[in-house]
Length: 197
Image (cartoon, helix red, strand yellow):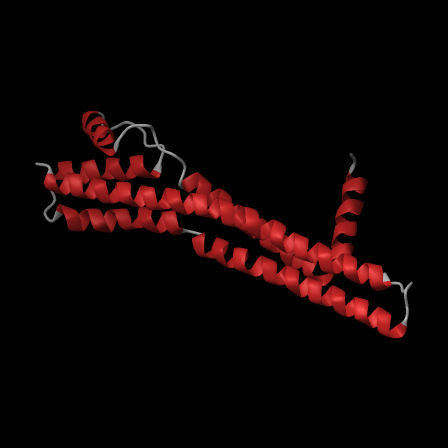
């Protein structure tokens, strides 16, 4: 498959969707960038429990941290070993950056998931207007495609809006569950470090 074939296919895609296609394409790119970023940040940690990870980083404080929970535990252990006063307050301050990182792009993804079907609906309305204009003027074979072109645009943009939103909803719900579990693990780390002597 050469470049010209791909270019012609993309051009035909844009033409069949009308003016709604560029915003939908932008939404698709932003959605998958946000989801990919969140997936990377919220990736699964080692299969150890929080208590085992705390014990591991106490024994080997120089071990590399590959995950947000690993980094938090390593930083928490370092704070505990430094003997700071009001450890819980310091842990809340240090872990706030991790909590902020876990929430990054979640609002963007939520907005795009809501906007995409609406953009598809806008394309549907535009396609139906074209269809009724063709019927009103009885121009069944107009340059823009007439009745068939209007109905095609209406259905295609609806399909594209849903094709952007539905996978976004499914992946985002999985990532939100991971974020919730990770936030609970961070709270457990704070509690364990604050209460252990």
